[in-house]
Structure formats: structure tokens, C-alpha cells
Length: 476
Ligand SMILES: Cc1cc2nc3c(=O)[nH]c(=O)nc-3n(C[C@H](O)[C@H](O)[C@H](O)COP(=O)(O)OP(=O)(O)OC[C@H]3O[C@@H](n4cnc5c(N)ncnc54)[C@H](O)[C@@H]3O)c2cc1C
Image (cartoon, rainbow, N blue to C red; front, side, top):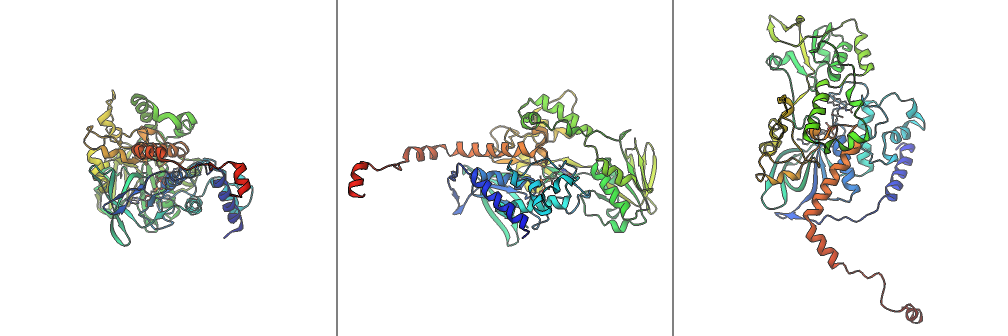
């Protein structure tokens, strides 16, 4: 191992020791159907799942497991469909480090590249972010099982546990857990979305930015990219860099979004307490943020617009898409575009019921549309899950599925209720401790009688009743 990293790991061990109080595990062990029950199962070993697991361990919740569908090293979007060179997030944003300096990205980066190297870094390369997350989980010795997929969640009546079905390399496995954290990606409460007219095109003529795209096959081709967010531009850049004959980006709005609205909410007040506000306030703020969307960065703009083969059409929502002969014709108010291939940078849609693994949750969980009727309805926002202050799903009809309080939504689905939180680097510093506190509170409250027995039965004497002067004489 790199000596810088070895030294850093020694510092990490020392730092963790210095803040180890209180050290005792405190959650009583449970079993169900002859099996040990987990305290918490975390689904997803991306940045969110790793940060949650690290915090749970720090609070001495020991019986945890993190599972991830992807093989080790391939978690999250970073090495697959994230097609930018660097994270868009500023390099100094902290998140999965629990506020411990030796666990920050900066400490890891300087351990590898030398002291002071962070000063010269522009932004974090996505490959480095992925490697850092792997290091974190290793240095904290977090229990992660890769190539393991959540397939089904089932409540077990009056048992205090959830039954979980996992697809593992060894086959289907049933396990039990008291709490479940869904950190399985930005799209984990819904699905990547394409306009229906594009989805209806032949499969070899269109893709979503989240798909595995063979860019080599686009050499010499005419490509349209629909959408004007960061991922749309990243995909336009890769198509151009692979020698596409032309790339036309179709932006619905009359003008490109150039302001980054998420910068103005990056304050301790907002990130820490947005989730405490009334429905009306949260709706109003998130409606604004979700409607303006995120702007792309200057470097992404430069990466794309340096190419002569690039063109931008604004005020160009796609009205229809059809095959005419061997080409795709996209009709827009700004004119019709004829291309060979279409890439949709059209984001995702909230739809709990589109996730087979969440079938039971989707049947019972309230969404915003069940809880809040704004003056101007917004169907898209109304589909966001309505989660409580600890990220737990709540029942659509009270009393029908109390077990939902065991399932915590730590992905983009929680954003309308909690602001930047799950699936967000910038919100993680506040969101992860909040989630973990809620889990601790629920477990402690549920086990209160056992804790009371422990407290009342505690009988370890601090000193013997023998007088010191007598024991000095007898040597006992
Ligand atoms: C293309 C792209 C670029 C982004 N760039 C930035 C950026 O620059 N800056 C920024 O702040 N944010 C960025 N984001 C937003 C956000 O930070 C990322 O989406 C981030 O990966 C979210 O972390 P996560 O842990 O919630 O999910 P992920 O990192 O996606 O991890 C989820 C994990 O869950 C696993 N999984 C999925 N389904 C299952 C299942 N059923 N069972 C078990 N495991 C499962 C997946 O294999 C995956 O490894 C970007 C998002 C995307 C999509």
C-alpha cells in the first residue's frame, strides 16, 4: 500500500479511538424463525449507503449489512453512465466523512498525491470519488455484500421485523431486519424517463443518458440530444468526442438555465432544517427548485461548444418523433430535425409502483398528492413519496401498514420532504445524522422495556465492601 495511505489509516484509527465514547453496543439481539435479525439493512453501497452504514456503526448499531447489486468497485454511476470528467460538486463539500478530518476526500487525496496537492485540484475526478468511497468502506471495515440485489420486502405481522428477499451469487436468500434503508440510487423511487414518442422509436434509434450507450457506433452519425441539463450536455460531449457528424441539443425552454439554484440553499439552516417546515413551505421551495433545475458548469459548456459539429435549439420541445425512411424526424416549434440517433437527457420520474422490489411499499405509502393540495396542482411533484422527519415512509391510510415506519427512503424520492438529502453530496452532512438519529430513536423506544430491565437489573459493584485498611493488612 502507498505509504501516505498507510499513515493516513493510522491517523484514522487514532481519531476514531479518540471519539469512541460511548463504546458499548446497545441494541438487543433478536431472532426470527431461527435466524438472527439485522438491526438495519442498507440497500445500496454508493455514497449514501456507505455514509449511513458508517454513521450507524459510529452510534454502535452493530448488526448491519449493506448490499449492492453491482460488483465491488462498480457501485453508483461514477464509472459507467456518469459521463462528465469531474464531479460538479465543489471539491470542499464534505459528506460521507462523519465530520472527521482524516476521513475527508481531501485527506485521502493528499495521502496519495502529497500534502498540499488538494490546493491545486480543480474539481474531484469521478474515478477518484469512486476510489475514495471504496477506501472509506474498507478503512471503516463496513460489512458490504456485493452482487446482491433487493428483490422483495414483506412485513411479518406482529413480529417487529421485515422479511427481505435478496438475490445473491449463492441464490435467493431470505433474511430479516428491523429497519431498512433504501439508498439504492437517485432513481430508486421511480424510473428514468423518456418522452413517450421517443420511447416508441425503434430501440436501436434511441437511448436514455442513464443507459449503456455504444458511442463508437455514433461516429459519423447525426445525433439529437433532448434536454438541457448537465447529463444531456455530458452525453452530447461524449458523442462529439467520438466523432458524431452533428449533435443537436433540443432545449424546451426559450433560454438555457444558467443559474445554479442549489448554491443558494447550501446553508446549515436550509440543509439542516428544511425538513422541519410546513408542507406549504416545502412545496413552494421545491416547486421553484425543481422547475428551474440544475445548471451545467462552465467546463461542461466549454467541452461541448468547442466543437463545430454542435448546435443548440432553444424553445424546441419535441412535438412528435417518427421514423421517415431511415431517419428519425423530430418535430419542434423551432423546426424539424432529422437525425440517426436520439439521446434523452430527460431525467427521471417519481413512480414507486414502477419498482418491482418496492411493490409492497408502493401499495401503502403516501405520496405528496395524498397529503397536500396546492393551489396549482403539479402531478409530477405529487408523485414524490411523503416521508416523515426521519425519512420513513408514512401510510396512505393510517393503520393499514404500520410497518412502513421501518422503511426509510434515503434517495432522491425524499427530496420534496427533506430537501437535498438522499442521493445528494451537498445534503449528506446533515441528512445522514438525521436519518441515523431517527433509527436510533425508534430502536431505543421499541426496546424500552428491555433497556429498563437492564437498568434496574444492573448490579456491578464499583468497589468491595471490605475496608481498605483491612485489605491492606490482609493483602486482599
Ligand atoms: C450521471 C450522474 C451524475 C451525477 N453527478 C453528480 C455530481 O457531480 N455531483 C453531485 O453532487 N451529485 C451528482 N449526481 C447525483 C448523486 O450524487 C448521485 O446520483 C449519487 O450516485 C447518489 O448516491 P447514492 O448512494 O444515493 O446512489 P448510487 O451512487 O447510485 O448508489 C446506489 C447503489 O445501489 C445499487 N442498487 C440499485 N438497485 C439495487 C437493488 N435492487 N439491490 C441492491 N442494490 C441496488 C446500485 O448498484 C448502486 O451501486 C449525479 C447523478 C448522476 C445520475
